Length: 230
Image (cartoon, rainbow, N blue to C red; front, side, top):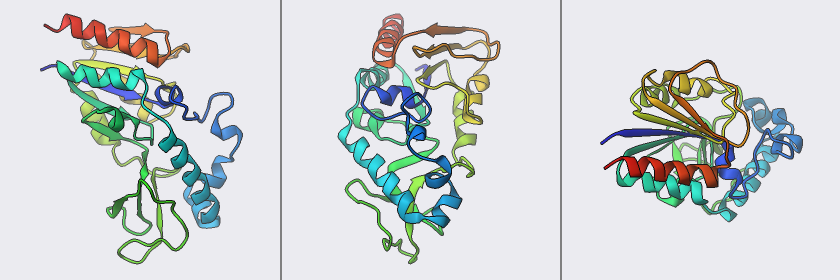
């Protein structure tokens, strides 16, 4: 079975109503990144950080997977599909995708502030000051903040290097190290970028662009790949 590796960003979730960060009208126009998404912000004002992520969690809980998410599930009928996502929402999982690697954490989980291995499901939980892990430390969002290492990055590069097809959806490919995943894919393998915007990338062979929003371009591409795989 051929392997499809899919790399998704905020664009795929935007169509489900989840605000992006960097686009016009995005979250960083309303919040100072340094006040809500860094280790220093957590030390300075944990209440503000928790309020920000509690609101984000509520937004995710109100959202639903869209046609692009479901199209990626359809690909599992004939392909080994691995999703690598920059998104912290759980829309891929709710759509039914079986293998999802989150690079920047998961909004539906919390973790210990002293032991990164202590991670807890928290789908209905509004995280507050005074919520502790089993070691007695304050729980924090299970999110990779700016200035922190991306723990799954090495695994993501390993997965990308094994791809027969590599599909990029809804990300500008401007933030490293994640943006380098495209360059990790073998030169002779086919790559696709699905995004309504013009994406600037280094010269790469065997790459095809679909300048469409995810809910249109991804189902079309999925149908094309499924029809060719007899």
